[in-house]
Length: 159
Image 1 (cartoon, one colour):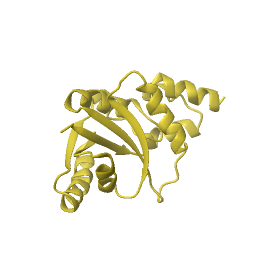
Image 2 (image 1 turned 180 degrees about the vertical axis):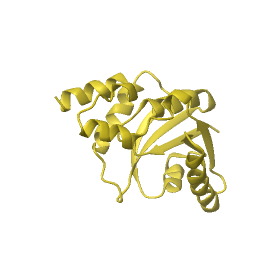
Image 3 (image 1 turned 135 degrees about the vertical axis):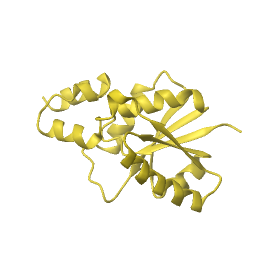
Image 4 (image 1 turned 90 degrees about the horizontal axis):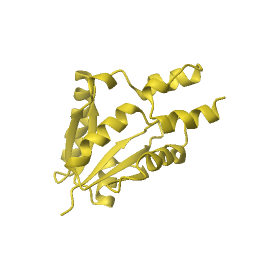
């Protein structure tokens, strides 16, 4: 059985923190699906298609990573793609408390799907999409927080 993992999130935008977690998870799984979840309670800054494009471009040479857009429960999408693992990045203890609650709910819904937590590299703990969006909105320099490809595409949009 292939070890397929879903890394769900909004990725609005894709940050160096996201890339760090994906890259460090590569040896653990046969395939990582970066799932861009459509959340009706959030108003994203970037379209789901743009976020998917970033993932596909960043990982165009890595056959183990693919992107997808999904709606609904993450656990249901896992079943759709035959993923038995959910990957989550943890920056702070407060992240763990929140993520553990979700992992416990997912385990109740389907005991065959396990959540795996990876802690972010210390240099990326301050990297949060919310902060990056605020920097972008206020025309600040978001380059220290973003993969070059994402930053360059934003530079073209927000000249």
